[in-house]
Image (cartoon, rainbow, N blue to C red; front, side, top):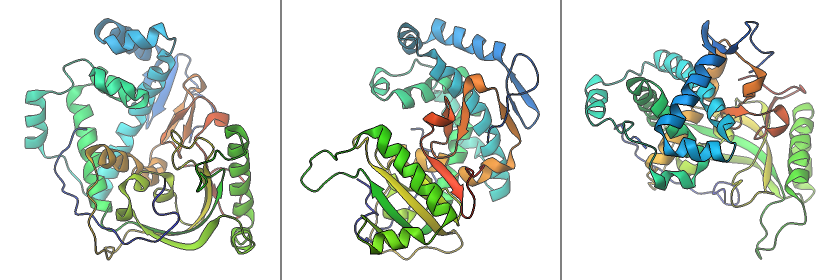
Length: 336
């Protein structure tokens, strides 16, 4: 359950900078192109070649192939090609550099030289991410992870958001399932976000009228590392969003929110410490890339999906995106 939604808590974390491994338009014009990212072309043949190699080298890839799920791997290959360029530009902009001694030490052990661990495969998304790391240049993949986590360490002490929100299909106090199905909850949440984008005061009227939610919610990223990895902390100020706080455990629970402010210029006052796990730090690092995606010029072949800023991922289609980010006073999803 999302900790910052329900009661206010002043939590903090001291994040070490140590290395812990833990908008798409029409398709590119070139025939046979999977993606073009800042002029760098990834071809469909290159993607297929990596998929063939994965099947040869990775037992987990063979499991996915048997389940006809290699399309997930193809999307992840294209996603990582895009995020590599985003993290490279973000690091340059933020003055973050890779520590070559740390990267060199990691390469001596090369955690990507062995197949995806069986224990990781219980989480398919994480397993596919790790699978594609192993298909890439290992130094580049490790460096990307390092830079993402350094970005998370830089922003966690200063990132805070002010927002209003309402809940759709939220878990009930008596643990009874909400009387709504996941598809309806999604459509209602997205409709609300689009309504709030056109009329930002509507959300406050709804909460004052008894809707489940809150207005004027202040939340530092340090208050909950799990929440800091969500779109709530990556969306720009003056945007409306719809997303799922906990899709695995609460598939009908959606939040529609208006992000009033997003600040990163001063340390957040805290009186408690909550250290993020390595996995949380990695997820936060990816989320912190969201404001920098717009710095990269990219086009994705529709066969690999569309960019989804809520999921920081490629969704198979716009109808399958993890939510929406909509600028206030507009009706189209924000391109990030």
